[in-house]
Every structure is written in C-alpha cells, then in structure tokens.
Length: 392
Image 1 (cartoon, one colour):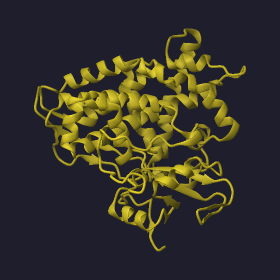
Image 2 (cartoon, helix red, strand yellow):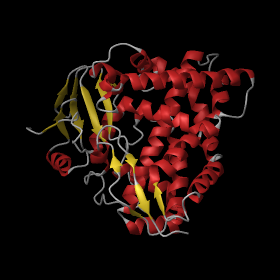
Image 3 (cartoon, one colour):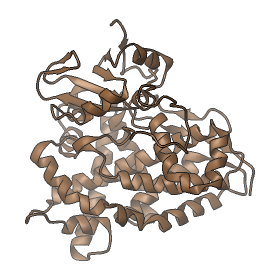
Image 4 (cartoon, one colour):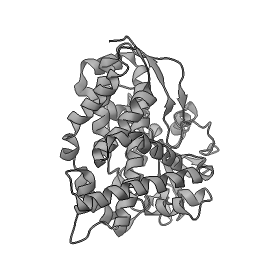
C-alpha cells in the first residue's frame, strides 16, 4: 500500500475523494500519526477492542508539550484516564447525565432557541455561529451546570480558547489554552464552593454529592471534570450545529421536511453526525502488540478511526446518501466502548430541539457566501456561516 495521509496538513480533508478511494482499496491506510481505519466494521470493532486504550492521552507529548498546566490538566481528564481511575470517576459522574434528567431540560432548550431566533427572524438573515450556535451552546452549558446565563460570553471565550487543544497546531496555542484553563477552573471552583455551602437542583450539586461505595469526587477531580464539560459541551454543540445546517442546506428537501416534521429532529442529529461530524477522527493507542486483520500494530502504536469514512462506508450501508428518515447503524461521532461520550444525551437533546426550529423559522434558507471554516480534520466546524432566508 503506497497511500499515506498527512493528518497534520491543514489542507487535508477527511471527507475527500482520496479518502473514499483509499477505503475502496483497503480498510486502513498509513498516516503521519500511525494508521487510519476507513471502514465501518473494522472501526466499530477497534473502538471496543480492549487491546487499545483512548489514544488522546499522548496528544500533548506528540506535539512536543511535556509539562505545564495544559499537559497536567489534559492527563487528568476522562479523555486520558484509563482502568480503575477512569471507571471510578465515570461511575461517579454518570448520575448527572441520565437521559431523563436531560430530557427534562427540553422545554428550557426550546425557549432558549426561540428567543435567539426571535432576534433575527424578521431580518431574513443571520450569521449563524455568532447569533445562534455559539450563544445557544454556551447558554445550554450554563443551564446544565447551573451557571449564571449572563456569563455565557465569558464561558464561550474560555471554551473557544480551550478548543485549540484539539487543533493540529496545538503546540503554538499553549499560552492561550493555559490562560483559558486557569480562568475557567477558578470560575467553576467558585461554583463548587457555592454548591457545597448552598446545594441546588443542578448538575454541579449532583456531582458534589455523588457517592459510590463511600467514594466521592475530590475537589480537584470536580474542577478538572467541570472545566472539560464546559469546554467540550459548548465547543462540540456549536461546531456540530454549524455543520448540521451546512449539510441540511445542501439538501433543501431535507430542510423542508425537518420543518414539517420536527419529530425527525433526533434522527437528523444522528444522520448529520454520520456524514459531517465535528469530531473527524477518534484515536486509540495499542497497549500491547496487536495483529489486527493482518495489520501489525506495535505497543504504543496510534490508530485513528476516520468518522466520516466509516459512517459513509457502502459495505455497512448500501445507500449512504443523506436522508433524515432512514435508520442507520450507530455512528462513531460520540466514540464507543468505555470512552463513549458521557454528555451524548445533552448534545443529542439540545441539537434535536434546535434543528427543527431553525428549519421551521428560516424557510427557504441558503448560505449567504462561503463562510469561514476550520480545516476538515481534527475537530472541525464553522467560524462564521452567514445565511439568508424568507423573513417571518
């Protein structure tokens, strides 16, 4: 096999014809960072294979970052922990993210989305990221954590700066990232202190009180977890909303259908994340020498599951074209196995509320120019996405 993908190249597009051509040739391809899995069956199996662990733990070191606040914080997040440490913290956090808890927030999400659209519906144009996706995602996080919604802009700024953690030029972003970690950690630590003294009916109080077999989260663990939740929840939802609207506007019939049938919102989220995910690859690291379908991966070897390639694999779904009415095999946008995203109910719920509402209230919507987008590699999304539509 002669194909080799340069995942560090900002111009590399994980959804490109070159990736599809490589998938037709083989289930994997060599990359600058190990190997990439391109087909659905092999991707699903690998993400659940206990011979591999979450591969992001080494991300700072792979980029020459071996010490400091960012490196230390990254090593303590759920994304990096394994084994008993990961299992204990995840077990203590799960009660705060149960589906019925998140489902009860739907009316608040609906009211928030309507409020934001009211701000531009009569104008017939919107810069989707600045006027909807970012405030919606940040205020959802504030609602979820019980934060003051008036602070959403500052929370969004911190989350935006922390988003550079996943950029392919992360080595040049460390001062910005560390300032965001420090600012957000001080903020959430103050919230934890308040909930210890004055409990409320919110996620932070649930986490503060969480106890399994007599164990609780330490103050340090709470701080690390809440910083990551605030950043990952806001960043992922904002980016995925922009990508979702981009995909739906490329299929105007689907946009109109979603407006007419809002009950398809949940399925639209799954379909968008299958074909146009913000998390374009999911990383695993071999914990031993592995023979994977004839591919020899040494201990410490890195493997990336390319989400779009796996999600559009014709071997797994004979007609992989975008269709919000179809039921598909589960996508890998939230990962899989023991590292399946803890906040997936939140992301699924807030987007399932927002997308049908946007479709209904922005009839005949079309992009108003190309917008500005992150590279279609690593974590991607829109920086700016202007849209025009028939005003209400």
